[in-house]
Amino acid sequence: MWEKREEHEQLLLQAASLFDHHQIQEELSSYYLRKQDFARAVYHHLRGCILLYQCDEDAYSQDHSNYSIEDEEDTDDKEDKELSIEQSQAIHETAIALLQEHQSPSLIRAVFLPFYRSFWYQILYDRDMHQAIVAVTSLLMVGASEEETTNERWDYAYSLDELGEHDKAVQAFRVYLKYHPDSDLTLNNLAVILENNGELAEALDLMEQALALNLNSEEERYQRNIKRMKKRLEDLRQENARGRWNQLIDTQKKLLYFIYEQDASDWQHLSLPSPWDEPTPLKEHWETFLHLGAIQETAEHGITIDTNWLPLVTQEGLLLLLCDDILKATHPRKKNPWCPTLEDFSPEARASLNKTQCLAFHKAVYSRLQTTERKDLLATVFLPFYRSIWRPLLLQKDLFEQVVETTAILTESLPEYTHSERWDYAYYGLKCAKLS
Image (cartoon, rainbow, N blue to C red):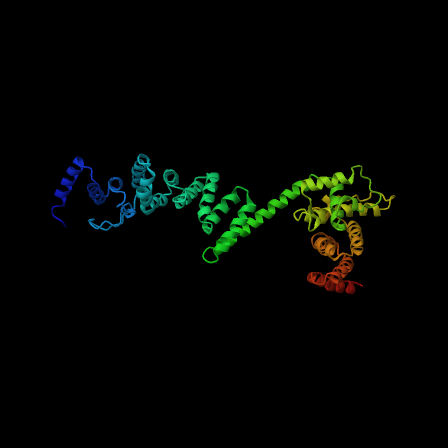
């Protein structure tokens, strides 16, 4: 240990009070670092850098501004120097006061940016001092160009997101991506913010870009995010479709089924059952469908039902028509006839249907199945309908013969799609044989 250190330090303090020089400032920085007065050490380090830069800009190297409290060679011990919250706060207040005082762009680039990157940012990040990071990076970005501070803009965006200022974070991340379009981490962060803002389509697109850029370390996390976003987007689209579907009257819902069933190109080519007692002109209904997005006109495919509406059209639209068919098939003199509604076929209400009602339902839908020649309708309408509603109704009343005659048509017409229906056909055919 140098025996005259204490005497040297007293002379240093006296010299500093008389003469402001960058070398004296650096010596003072080392002095206060040994005393573990980190805020004063930082002050004199930055003060020395500023003086040196102002003395000779051309000779100044940004390495002068780099800083660490771990690399001082002349410390008395090498014990852990993890900063306390109070020490980190004091360092920050000291450094930002100097930054606010010196807003020259050239000085920010030469002194404060290297100091922030080498030391300042880490102590703020380690203590979750995101408000401080926002304050510092805001000053750095004002003093230096957008291109020079892209990394600081990332810190700024991340901290804004942590503070709940998501709209500002989105803007900052977008600027960062202008200069770093292949940053999968930024794409991921931006995607998650947009997802939470409800902008699911763009979020999913960005997330898929992130995955394409990183198929190694982050692949599993990105895949999870994509799966979640796809599910949320699909749920949202179906929810929106359900909301618009509920705006329609029953007549319009049945019309949409006819449009799909007949692959109608316009309202004039729509063939409707007779009698069709509906006072509103078909053209008005057609315009309503276009307005709500239920149908879409494209040059390539003509008129198509929106994919999010399709499950509603092919299930509830068909059920409404079946309700009409059941009523038409009911004898006019029958006492207390069954007047079915959509609610009768909800999962909760199906169990209360009696065998006669299930048979009437089967007869109506089986009649439509027999007259359907288009394979695509069998695959997109009747097969899903059989699996979701028709089959459970038949089985709950042990209507095995009806299961067999239904699956006979489905398996013959759609052999590639009906593996489980072939099982139904064989199993319940055997049960019918045993019962007979």
